[in-house]
Image 1: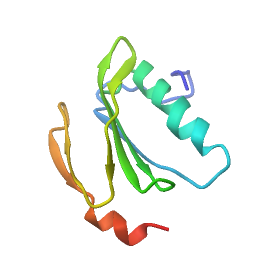
Image 2: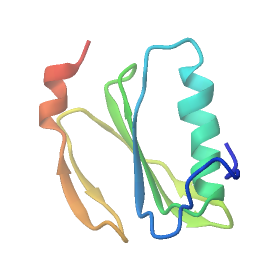
Image 3: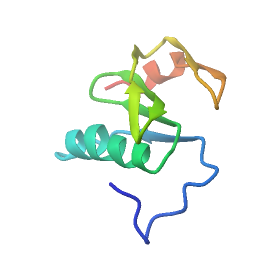
Length: 99
């Protein structure tokens, strides 16, 4: 998902948050294409709330258009989002929405 003329300018965007759908192309779109596209656009953090796996994935440590780290946390974990966001995210409430 490279940045195109129809996409918004990512300048100043610190993080993108995505919640997976149950569509048949979710794996390719949310876990591959968007990871690559957001990294290539220079967005420091891509937070993926993965409803198939009941996890939160923090794609971060951006270098040369690629995320170097993608730790995964189960729903209920306390997640420390790295710079430039620098917040603590309590994911306990996500358990209420697990399928």
